[in-house]
Picture 1 (cartoon, rainbow, N blue to C red):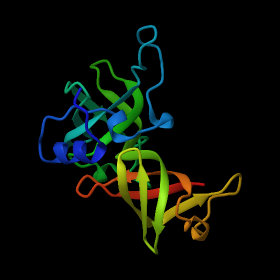
Picture 2: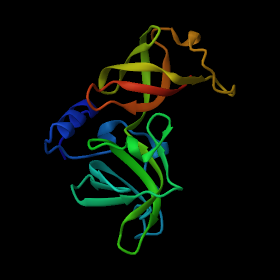
Picture 3: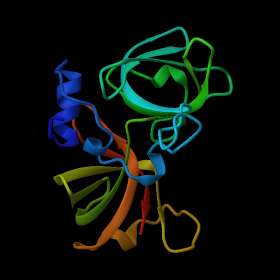
Picture 4: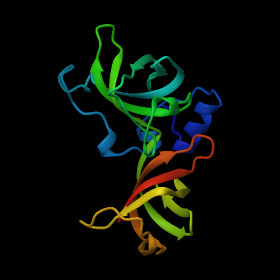
Length: 194
């Protein structure tokens, strides 16, 4: 496997390179990893997949998995699509990395229940916070998070809040969930767990 960070992988993927796809390389964490299921004993669930979108056509995502094997994902009216916020199938673009959970059709197509696009789940150290930007350090080095109109913070057991004022503390560790932007490597932050 090629050792590269998520920014290098996304740049390589967008520019058509041959980087090896890996959820770990993108910094994905526990809530979004495959679970063991009904496939081979100790294997991954056949109802879960992740990959890189190559094309989108008439309710079908044509993709490749981390071994560059072809993968087809179908959506229907009941499919949930998440790209920072709940959205529609129209927001799925070539170059998006995704996780999907669903059920297998007889032809092997995975019919999506939920698709997470470009999702990242990182533990970071805050360096600086301004009105719409959070500079941080994570295991890949420095990064930039964009505070979006939908960004919320969760403190202990309190409900999610748009009040981000308590986060402006350099050196504070938090967890962020959001979407990486393939063109810039920036994170559009959806949720901050403090």
